[in-house]
Each structure stands twice: as C-alpha cells, then as structure tokens.
Image 1 (cartoon, rainbow, N blue to C red):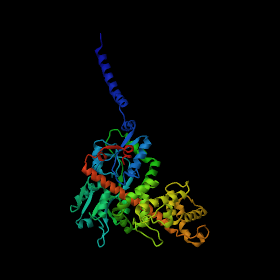
Image 2: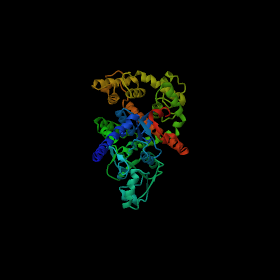
Image 3: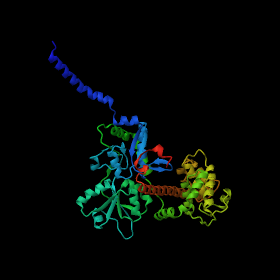
Image 4: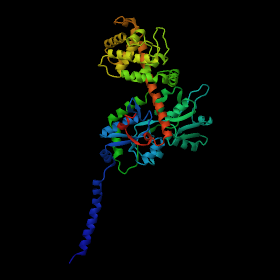
Length: 492
C-alpha cells in the first residue's frame, strides 16, 4: 500500500529543493549588465558636442569626456559608441529610456538627480560661478543680494544643475530672476555675455576656466555654492556590475594620472595675447579670413601642412592683410622677402593666392632643414622659429642649448637660449652672431595661440551651422541617432 505521508514529504522536499535551485538556474542563464556589454563589444556614451566633452579636432575625436570614456572601453577591450542628444535635457530622457549605458557631460551630482539615476565615483569637482562682462563704470556684483538688487535676469541651461540651484535659491530669495532655455550651450551663453546680448549666466568653474581666454573681458563675479562633484551618470540597475567596474577603473593610479593630464590638456588653457589682440582676431576671423580661406585649403593640398597652421602664420605675419609691407621690404599675407619669393616662384607678393601658397612651400623648405629625428610638434616649432629668425640663428641657439647641458632637440629648452643671441658674450661664440632672439620665441608662442583661437572659432562656427541644420531638419540623424565613432569620422 502506498504511503501517502511519505509522498507528501517527498513533494515538500522537492519544493524546497526547487526554491534553492531556481535562483541558481536563473543566474546561470542570465547575464550581468557588464557581461552583456562585453558580449556586445561596445559601450554607449551619452554626451554632448562641446569643447569640454566631445568634439572633432583635425579629424580626430577629442574632449575630456570622450578621452576618459575611450580609455575605459580600451581597458575593457571593447569599442566606444557615442549617443549625441540634441539638447542637454535630452541626456536625461535618453538615459531614462536606457538608450545609453553611461552619460558623461560634465554632470554635477545633485540630490534631485540621485533620485532618478546612479553615479560613479566622482572624477572632478567644480563650483557654480556667476559670470559677467567687465564694463567701464559698472562694478561687478559682489554677492547674490547685490545681483538681485540690480533687477537683472540670469540665463541658464534648462534642466541643468544650475537651474536646479537657482530654483532652490528662489525659495529663500523670491526676487531672484532667472530663465532657462534648451536653445544654448554653456559656451554659447558665455559668448552671449561677451557680446552683451545677456548680462549674466552661470557656468561651472571647470568650463569657465577652460574657455575664458577665448572671451576677453568675461570674469567670475562669485560662486553660488560649495564645490560639487562631477561624475558619470548611470540608469538604475539591480545589478551593479557596470558601476562597480567603472569605479574600479576610476580608482586605478593610471586613470588618476590620465585625468590629471586631461585636465591640463582641456581645461588649463591660457591665452597670453592681450584683450585687444584676441578681440581683433575674432573680428578678423569674421571679416578677413573668409576672403582668403580657400587659398589656405589649396596650400594644404599642395604641401600637406595643416591649413590652420598656415592661417595662424599668415595672421601673425600680416593680420591677413594682402597689402601689408614692413619697413624691411617684406610683403603680403605671408610677408615674404624678395629672395624667399623667388625661391618659391612667387611673382606678386601682394597677390593673396601666390603669397599663401608660396609661403607654404617656403615653410616646407625650412622644415626639411630640421633634423628628422626631432618629433612633432617640436619639429614644427623649430621650423617656425627658423622661418622667423633664420635657420642659421636657430642652429646657433641649439648649440648654446647643448653647451648648457640641455636638449637641443627640445623646443622648450632651445627657446630659453634664443634670447641669449642678443648678448655679445654668447653670440660672439657661435657662427652666425647676433640675432633678435626674443622675436622667434614670441613668434612661435603667438602662432600657437592663434592656432588655438582659430580652432575654437572654427568649432563654434561648425556648431552654429549644425544647430541651424538641426533647426531646419529636426530628424537630422547626427543629433538623435547612436553613432559609432569609427563610422562618423569619414563624414566629418
């Protein structure tokens, strides 16, 4: 006879066994978030097209957030994909819809954001600064109360941490006036303050410090809050594998060293040119450059020298004035001597096309004199110094550098010794004698700054054009589709 009680005991035992086994079985069949990403072979970074996050520089992706995320995906052995939402606000909707794995866009960790998202270990800290343009006769606001008393409106980005901060401040200061918009980026707001279209904006100090040299006259009035953390943002997930992996990566000594170098590369930028030099350059980019820009492109095609480098040389030489003439008789946009013009078959030095293309070919001849063992970018800096002061004097400075026990193949060492060619006790000991050694040092420094300024103006021009195209065509794929970096480079 069958024992019913034993049957019940067996069934209960089987149920208990299943209760323990099912989670194990499920765990065998399910993947972690990180495991799924590794299997797919790529990680999606949600970011913006801006100088501090991601942009194309000379055909190559660049930007703090891009470089850091690229390092992380290389650490994992997978590819990086970019998701570029059309507005800052769309970063959050994109992450809410899980169309990206991480968001990296100089995002501040705030209490409100932590209610909906998770954050990695912070990698930078910043403060929120009120920015204004210096104006004769008007003092800068010294604090929030002073700013409110002026009855002015502060313009900020919609759904930003700055809008969140102002919303909280308004509870204590009802008279505080501010407006938010998705139409502009932080940099565009800085430009509007610079052009006096608006009077105040709020940006994080990291962004301001990186861009202030390009907007002469802009200053921080005061900080609105204590330092806050910047971190990558993630959508909430039961499995913390991706977040834990990111945090382990950020804690690596190599990553910390990388972050320091990226801060130096992208944020610690300075412009030694004066207020009026920079302002004049911005004006000439708009008025003079368009008339001759095509000739710099042509010169690049013939010589393989970057057109922005050639344009920077032309600006340093003549401020892009084709009729420029110096007291020594050099002429034209590239200020060629008669001898240099003959060497490169230029018959009319005041003809913009001849001058620019001829100047490029002359620079090639100078660059060939620089030893091949000297790597870039020092090879170019030596060529520019030789272009300015003459190759013989440059060689003399390199001799002095070697005598001092420093590296004659390193521009930072040689530029310290070029000025010594103005001193008799030094120039009497070298082959070519006296030279105005300070000039090539300033010449190279200015050209490097003009390259930086021009690159910035080109980025800004491209961003405006992309925005206009997006406004006319809301379905433009470059704004709302996930784009693999390797796929978009040819198009850019």
